[in-house]
Length: 428
Image (tube, rainbow, N blue to C red; front, side):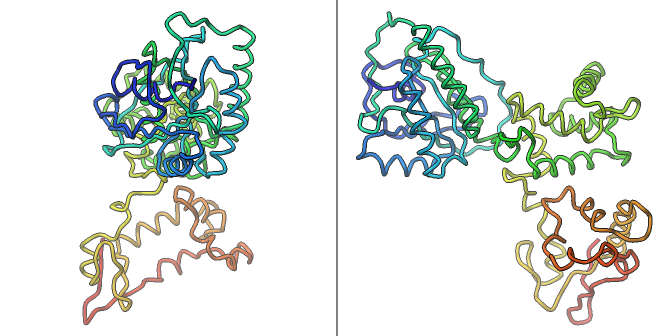
């Protein structure tokens, strides 16, 4: 018989166990009211039979997340996940999607499944799609027909230990597997939780945030979080005091922290990061990054994504278009639009206010106060951007620090002027 994947889909859709299930279910819509994030989901069941191969590959390519199912009572089905299905998903180049390993027929396995992670706030109102792959063999039907009955015996201890070892090996060898879950369609245990986790893996993806192999936040995520830290550091002293931390907390989560909660945050950071908090000053950048990494490590990607989205980041950790496009007033004055370039014979000129802003930035990052920005200074200037734009010019990087330095006098005097007829284009 099969591993129980189709019975799982039916149980999620009908909230009932169906003993005689078809080999494959048609695409099944799970309504929004089933999920904490109120986002509907389309579940695409698949088969491992050869005649279904094209459909399987197509569904995997179009899906947002893949549930790879095995039977909790079948060591062979779990071994096949390791030996065939994960390498096959790698061959199909779908391992960049969230992969959840789901043990069906959990009622045959004595240990209780892990508890579900807490739910976060919704980040999207669009439907997500999930492909469900079975760990049955390539020539069977992948059927979810279940003839165990209510009196199914628990697994032999030796088989259970062997399965736990295989699971441990899969988790350590295949970092692309984000989560391992177990469920029982027969008992209706953790059925909805499986699909809630699948949806959250799409709404709050861990891939852009965290490198599972190194166990660290990814560089673009660190740069984005550093920008957020600096924006919240209103007095620019390099620390988030209680007032600044509460402003951040309220902006992201609409709830300030109580004094005892602030003390708890500091204690958590100080227990792990010696320079994460400065007494009397506040949370350092290292401490702030540690807290966000802790959220991810504990499966609370929704918290980190809430922070990032509050400050304008999309799922690829770039700022949303409306935050970076040319202001409409400037675009209109220059003869273009907010989404199109101005005519080639026109450029925008910095106003006096804009020049003062950049001179202030220059002075803040001129760490040795020599009136020059070295390559290291420039790197720090752009440390909160996706990348340093000066890296696009390798010829500049090949010369000496002194030659590549930017002089504040030349920077402030290099003002581009744009004229259309007799008028200048300006914007404050």
